[in-house]
Length: 281
Image 1 (cartoon, rainbow, N blue to C red):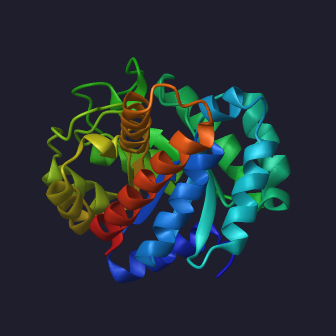
Image 2: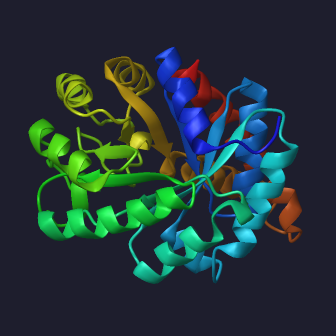
């Protein structure tokens, strides 16, 4: 296979009643592990770079280029997505880079802004992004809610979601249905009835963020209810870090990073393959 467009991956998931597994990349080892896991499962995925990850690497070009090369050589279809972009300058740069770096989609996150400003900022970015060939995702939860749509207890209103999608022209909508970012235990309880009502109310695919805190069985139910893109980040980091700790605890004199990064990378690839089966199997 080769580098795939996000739109193609999402359309295929919609046709099959599945969701696209979407995994956050922090390091090169993350990206390698995700691609290896996707190949193990034989399922297409998205490599996601967040605004925070881009800032960590001093810009988006190095990691975008790495993701592009890994996707091009993968056996499974791999797309590249930019996640939770808030800074106007980075959104503009992402739109300008576009296909040149294999980018297929961008999440514009103005969810902490008051509703009207969220609409205005998102609509502008969506118009420009779509003209550049990008699939555009946005987020909506409690209007003006602190910490955005995924603050604890926040829920997306179906009628408001329909108005937001119509007003902004986005291609996908991240909704608040009970998950939260950065959860380290799988204890989240999703509002499956709300997911179904949101899927009925809006005519674009629904995206679930904060999925690391959701039990596997509930993830399957969420996909059945209408979720079409599932984001996973913290769960990969938890597995990666636990493996590094285990190796270093067993060999405290170890200094070669390859000796502890390779097992961590393998552990993440196994988790990715498992989650691909849960989300899109």
